[in-house]
Amino acid sequence: MRDERLPLVRRHMALRCAVGDYGPLGFHATWAYLSATACPAPDLRRDAAALSRALGTLEESRAAYLAEMAVLAARRRAEKAVGRRTPRASDMATLRGPRWPSSTAPSRLGLIAAVANRHSAFQRLPYPDETLSPDIDVRRLSHLHARLDGCASSYLKTLGHLDRPAAAELTDTVHGIRGLTRPGYSPLNMYLLPWLRFANLLTYAAAASAGRESG
Image 1: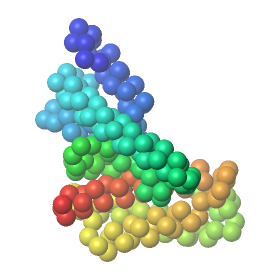
Image 2 (image 1 turned 180 degrees about the vertical axis):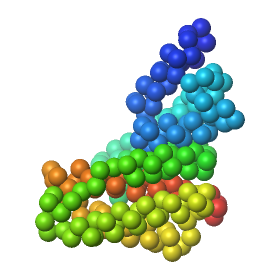
Image 3 (image 1 turned 30 degrees about the vertical axis):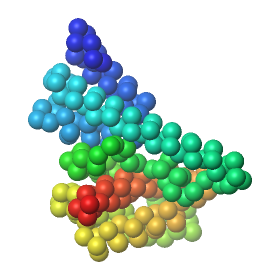
């Protein structure tokens, strides 16, 4: 990746492979984050300097993640030694869901780019119909889809800001989608789980922006 003797296209592919191995926001959202934060020339296919900046950003996040995991592993060993076998809810939250580990606050620009990328994909997702789950009113699905779309649009329109009512609306929408998912295999889950992944990314991005403002 850092070998400047290699063609740029090979180094570009190497970075994509690295994101495939470590993509804390999901592959596409992570790539969008890196492309946005490699400014002022975010075209990673043609700009070697931007490519190197993106790699540095990814490596810094990976190092922060490994440090967090080392602390978590040490704490879990100590807890198990005194008989506490169940992990804390906060520990499980650290291991699940999208987030950008870093020694500094995540880039708002990067998170906006990640949300914009996944919002576009969300709008193109196939839509479930009532035949997949007769016990669910299809109008309820339509309502949740529209609410999530509206929350994302509000986040992007305000450049990463969600006021208190909008944040509450997003939280309620996430609970509504999660409440319709089914344990194990369910045809409806194939539609709802991508919605939920996008909703979780949006929730994280909005909370990270709010944290920067209050910090």
